[in-house]
Length: 212
Image (cartoon, rainbow, N blue to C red; front, side):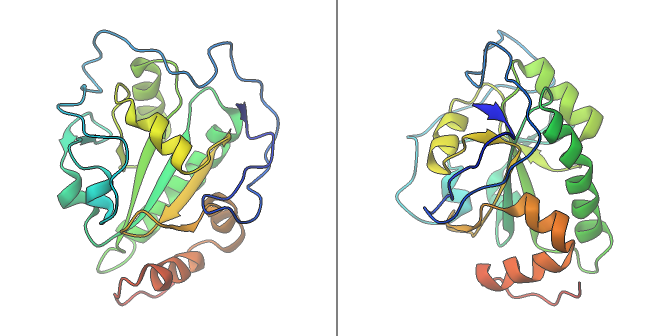
């Protein structure tokens, strides 16, 4: 896989993905390495089969713990219920990722901190970093206060396969069921700003007063 340098297929088989500047993947590629211990990104407490047959985003992450930016374990049932979810496939070694992450951070802050009540939106970072230490450093340096799948959870490979991730960065916007709203979240945020969230909200069938 290369970083942002080729067109990606849609998560539901439609249309191409986004194109960004070229950056060669280091030799390890996206076969993430495992470290014995990284206190800032705790290992997963338990694992379930790769992909649930249906249900909501809580089911998609069933049996797993997510982590916050500061490394605290988070229950997905509480964190993702009744929200539009952005699955952010990214890595600190990827130059286009480092370019887009601050834009996503501003978008996230405006939706959650600049709106009353906060918009029903959450980001889950799916790392393609080469180590848990690299992932934690990238999150601490550049990410918003969103969530992440722990580095050591092999489920990230199932998610990449499920959503046809062939290049990063990629922001896949999904419904509560895990069904794709758009696999072009990055482009839509760049082109439309906050106004794209209203469209996501309508497609997701989550009803809440929201002014863009």
